Length: 510
Image (tube, rainbow, N blue to C red; front, side, top):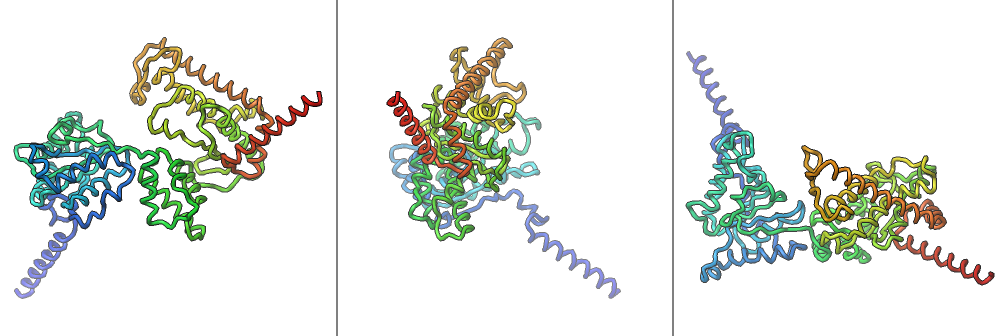
């Protein structure tokens, strides 16, 4: 009997130890009753560590959100005149523009509790868990009101209803319904401001965007030149930057960069500085970091060969046309040092800041852009002959085709007239973005070919008329492997001056 009792007690103790370990482990059976608990990270004002001064480059968005901070600090200023602060603010913008930082800055400025959660954390494989987490989140927020709830990537839970396969009763829709009710249902949420961020506003449910829920939509767009300069100044505080580095020059070189990309740029520059055993970041590291992020990793230079010579003439064709065409962006650098991804060399231009910020491109600029893109192919044909043209211009031809098609079907810049025949994004099922007849399709193809052929003829003519200059520039590029824009323009100016002197001397002799 004692042996049997001892065995029974040993089994009971073992089972209790296993249950206790399971209860303490995350995701174990002991956590089954906590499925419906919110996983939101709770932070008080001292833990956010972010203020408006730490968020640069998005001044317009900060001005719109300043009212939210004022309401959280002094709500009586609004309630005295009967004003009602928006219950929800939706931050819309590309990835890396600072939407999350902006939400933290609001909480830091107002000095209120800050709940942060991702939209995907609401949804589980068990039905009803997401809705339960929404209820638990708002219950905690009411206990700490006034406060801010920040939902990142809300499109994971806020997509349009009635488009799924599950008959409209799946877990995601139940979670969305609960969120809609909590934001503007029978019970008011006084003092709770919901801030959400997404880069896909087109897929959100309309009930989520109506007044009373997300009343205000703030666009957090890519920074302009002034914004990029402010962002660089913020991130340069923690870096040892040499005095010769011009943040203004870096800001002009990086149009289209988001705040996250600019921070990554300075970090890559610091890594290169440490690798080269320098004490401070110089402009050389910054230039190399920009090329690495935009083009690719630098590889070993090519040995002297026919391939290297053909690459030099190809890139000179691009670079020379960028300088000679009146409406084309000016050259920043040209190199024949290969990069990762099969890039044998590249010609880099200085983008037009006004066009990029406004998104408005002229017909003359588009035609010169197409001509410049075909300059490499034209140089190969003029120097080495049509039979020696290789496949190195594949990406250039794709770019030419896309630009020419947009000119004809989107921008209305052809003899077909001002007609929008296609959308910017084509239909993945039909293969095209417009609804037009086969006759119009034939005319579209003809217009695209005419634009490409005319620009290619212009590129060949310019290369042919400046053949001596092309040879001189190619020799300089083969010798130095990289030519900066100023060096390139100096060679052109010296060649033109020498040509004028020879012509003047010939006229004097005659």
